[in-house]
Length: 445
Image (cartoon, rainbow, N blue to C red; front, top):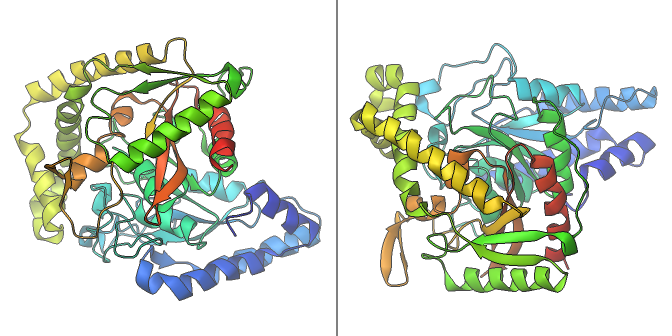
């Protein structure tokens, strides 16, 4: 089903070649047959989705155009409010929660005609990169069920990869859209910070949190972004062809710890782009080695502040690893947080500078093949690193700086997908998507 674009499916619905009910039933069948193992969903709105699909079919029969997502089954990460239903954030802490209204982004989806088919599993409170720690059990990679699907938007990526939904909406605080997109072989877009409303989304670290789409194609991600975007339209720019494009590879730090097969595949992609006329040069983020510390001293205290009441009153309801990270935030001094924000400004300027006279940065999304479920560390080049540190290594900078970034499927290793990441100018997400469309075409040849 994800071989078809949203635009194609909507066209088929409107022409009578396909019905919204058939489309919903197809997704529900995939959920019924696969989700006992994959565990992508926490809540499925089967009856409600079927009713909305019937209404969509009646509207089409009467010549009514509901919108560009007419009848499309879309899943959302269960950190996003859907009225009348629990928002669990995959935690026992929120077992009694029920949303009184839709998140703003859900309202926008509904206004465009989408049908919310269910709410997806995630790493508890979006505070992890593996999808392993959840009150509802771990989510599994559909390409290798013994491996992680990435996180924290694990169920969202799996729902798209396994044809349980046409697309999904996730959140990204350190890579939580792009990491699972890479691991599951789908497209994941983190827009410029602030472009998609977080009203009705459970916060983790507010100055780092982003929301965005996971989809089968760049075109679908672009359509969803256009509908979700709350900021004024950016200035229209002329679309460059690949032979007019300049890409920059930030090698120092980012490529220091990387699986050799991923590096080889990445180099092949670069050569393919150069063959099409793209100019690809090396660049540098001078203070890149400071990224983990700056991120840690920003995310931890913000996350702890977001959870201060429940962490005090119900600490036993958190999973041990998430609780431990939240408690660490209590020990970050105000001075260290403020120093981190100064360093963050430096990093933001350095990414801006790396993009001067260029169109995007290009680098892998993950430096490692998705590891086995339950693995906390991994050996790479004779050294052992934590899975969390490695999975965040290539993505977390762009949450700190707010630059838009997108992960595209670019191949596989031992049957498990890997991704390539493009990072664009701030407030130029549409330009990034235009470039990603052309790169996607190269990757698919």
